[in-house]
Image (cartoon, rainbow, N blue to C red; front, side, top):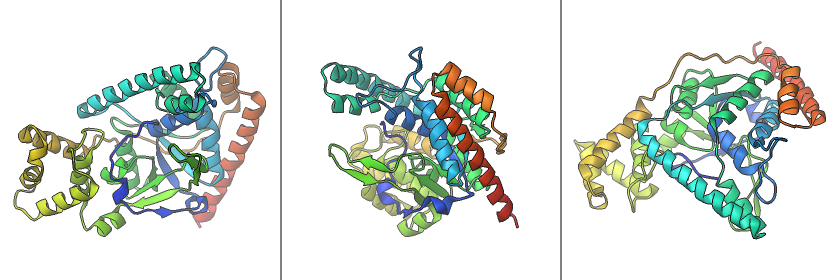
Length: 353
């Protein structure tokens, strides 16, 4: 699976949670991030994704239906936040990812043809593509399930972070760390991944549990503020830039802290890395543009976070009649969804007393 977002993870402290800690918590889920997870890992052993009778991919719908129900059975109230138009600076990253996916797809087909099954699966996970039609299908399914979705004007993580800051959600759910850079007080990782993960190039697995990252706690531990964390991220690389060659997380902290002691902070940072960039002035201009994306993101108040009653006939009609899902399995899923929703409503009423 392609890694997205900022590369600050190794700097941050986290707390492992049981799902019980998240009962009756509203989580604003980064929809694109999660759909890419489903498209990457919900595949057959040779890397072939799930498909309907017409050959259309359905891995995203399978993950969205069953794993969302799993979350709700644990008492979590999900809200899916979808990306809008990306900032212009991200377009180059989008192009690079598209090229990587296309190359991985070719390698996957070659490995599958030659019978290299493990290699085929690995390459397949890196070839996942989320189309506009898949996004529309996902929103349609969520609506039928009675689960709210929010359309962000630009970056989904920025919108989700804004919702947490407004206390319309408790945390952002994503595998990326950008929500913290957008100012979310809390980030949850590993919510929609199964209970174990294979270590790269090894026949070993590690247990996966939800991870909670608290923004203020991490800023305090690192002895920096949010602006400095943003600067550190830009130095080591974000969705909007590749970072500075030779600058890792620990060096970036030193550069930014040293810069904060100077009168012209930005110029001080540039001076520290000017031997590593070809055009320092151009680099500084881009640096400031990325700062603005994180500090003043394009977000909207035009959203509603309500959980409605599901529509069984619409779910069955869409998943079973159109997408070739097993009607028996889907009906069992609907029963689980109904019970989970009732339990959440009961818990919400109890918590209100």
